[in-house]
Length: 464
Image (cartoon, rainbow, N blue to C red; front, side, top):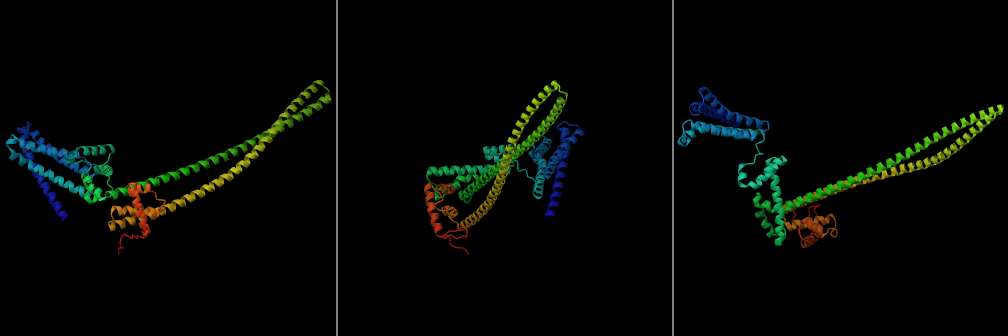
């Protein structure tokens, strides 16, 4: 059935377009020569150009929509050329004001053809899930709300977002600002949040933003859930930052220990090198002593006084060399002792490093285990909270009853004495007096057997 209707519509549109362009061609050819001053040949080209421009702009618009690069200017240009074609056709018979019937008859077919193409374009966009010019702000919005519409247009161009996304952002921001103004008005009027008088103000306050009465009355619970979600996300990021900081500190400590170990190894290598140099110096002294002995024996045999002086000088140099060797030996012994101490320190450092690494590994294991337990506990608390909220929704509890159960879950998660009034004020968004009465009601509810884990609520009748 759809295919048949589609084929019939396409055939009808083609016939309608062919008839309109045929009539327009004849009329524009005549008007181009007699009214607009074209020659006979140029008048025909003028007629073809006007009609082909309309078809080309419409076809290009459909093609660009198919390849998801829609350009709304093409449709505007096609509509403008259609209006120009109507004007040229109407002007062929004289003043338009004097020939309104002729102007209407000549404009009917082009207008119907453009409407048919627009209908086909909408079908194409719907069937192929193509982008449908949603980034173009409707004209009626500019007329009804020019200032907010300008802000939406500015956000679309500055941040390169679509019309729908910019609308959602603007609406969410406006509702948030209206909610803050509403809470300030309640504070000035000294009305308790959640009271009938306070709730009665919400629908009128949120009417400009398109919220129904039920949506407006449900806004306090929605904002409370959003605030709870933001706090949980902030806590999660804070825990992740703390863990990252501890890991960075552990890595820095390991790097410092590795540096100390490397320095101890370098000192030991330096001591070994100095010992080798001392041994080489002692070998040189022994060689010099041997040469001196040979010369002494030669002097004794020859009895030359000059040689004796040379031997004496050689012995003096040998004595000085021995003194230097002794000093070098002394330094080598001291360096060896220092090297031994450094080796002991290096061994102790390695032991401490191993112990520190073991402690770090153990601490990381404890952190991982604690994170796992915390995650399981959060999952359990979240599941209990979800079931409790669902049960509250089913039981159609009042906002006050919901707040009492929220505080009861906080007490069950810690202890009545550990849950301070400041935390309750922040959780339910109320004054200290309201928080105190709510805590008292929550303690009584817990004492009566309220347990979100099992779903038992003494104030709500059991459901099959």
